[in-house]
Image (cartoon, rainbow, N blue to C red; front, side, top):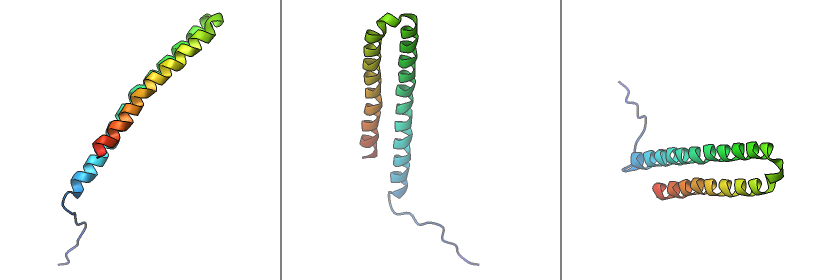
Length: 86
């Protein structure tokens, strides 16, 4: 019978691979929330501008502030990705 060698693992290799996959999934999950949040913020701002066009300046400013704060959540997830990856 012929022995077939499929793969040889070094010590700790499986743990490193699974932690990389887990970190990628965690960052993907962290990016879902801000993506939904930015969509809601922009959609509501467009609705508000359509209803009161004379207020489009303050609404636009508030929209960009909301986008910036929501995007900060994605950046936190990105930092946690690197911390988890080690």
